[in-house]
Picture 1 (cartoon, rainbow, N blue to C red):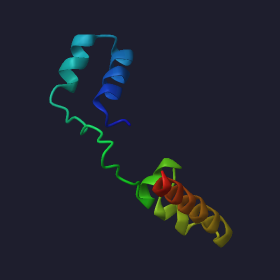
Picture 2 (picture 1 turned 135 degrees about the vertical axis):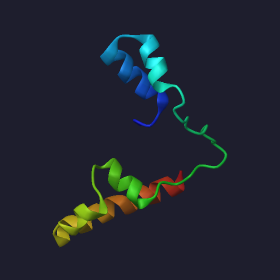
Picture 3 (picture 1 turned 60 degrees about the vertical axis):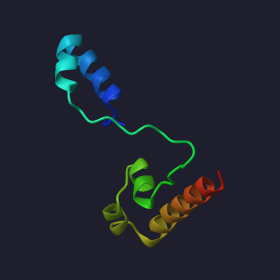
Picture 4 (picture 1 turned 45 degrees about the horizontal axis):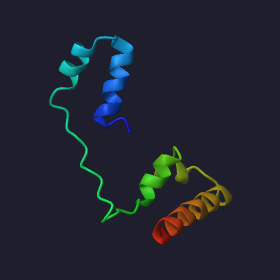
Length: 84
C-alpha cells in the first residue's frame, strides 16, 4: 500500500501542504502495474502472514498451538481465495 504512488503523494501532501514539492519529490517513482481481472494472482503464504503483521520468523517463536492456529487461518484464506 505504501508503495502505491498515490498513497505516497497524499501522505506527503498532508504532511508538507505544498503540492509542487510533493510532485517534485515523487517524480520518477515507479508506478504499480495495472490490475488485470482476467489473470488474478493468488496471494502467497508470506503475503498473507505479512497482512496479519507476522513473518515466518515470528512463527519460529510461537508455541505449537499458536503456530497451528496461524497455519489453519492461512490455509483457510488460501482455500477461500482459490474458490473465488
